[in-house]
Length: 241
Image (cartoon, rainbow, N blue to C red; front, side, top):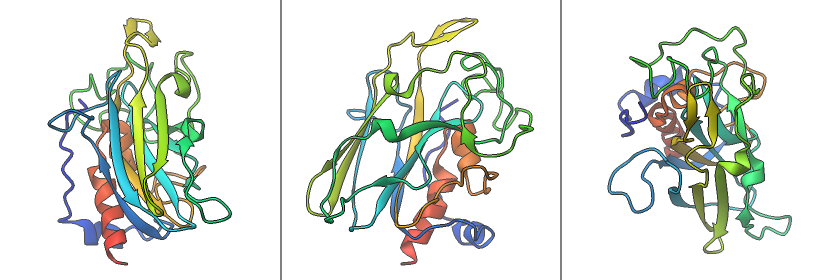
């Protein structure tokens, strides 16, 4: 279920980071978004709900984020690995609707079952990491194998708003209708997991397209909707600066 623990634990961060030097990029800051606007505790993003978070950035920085498509084995929403530019060529902060820069990705860590039906998907599985390994273990744009993946623009609205010369606010809305996901077992809502955000200056803080998952926590986010492990590593690297 998407209610798994979301508290970031830094106990083993130094060890994990030391074993994963391939995390490419200079990370300026990062964190988790996990509590819908108006809610008193962390939870998934159901239709009509929104996550918001703020951060500081400097010219040349980009924003990456990732969150699970809940009714799947290992699909997640994220921009391309280069990230979303935060400043224009004149070093002025940019803003607006950036939904078109968000894609649905396949982490390549678990074989895909029909979205909204598969027994090894987070809402239905008996325990974490119960699905079979994917024969294609590369991170890639998701393919619509079962012909029912909704268009991203019908699921999400992601907006970026400058709030100062170096400050930004991001709003992630689940704009889908409750019956958007069409399955062989009936219509299902699209639910989005809590996620991670990263401000960085070089591409690829979370994954590299066409390469296997790095083992830094993306698998837990994409399969279980739990960003804690990945966020711990990102937070650790940011704190080293």
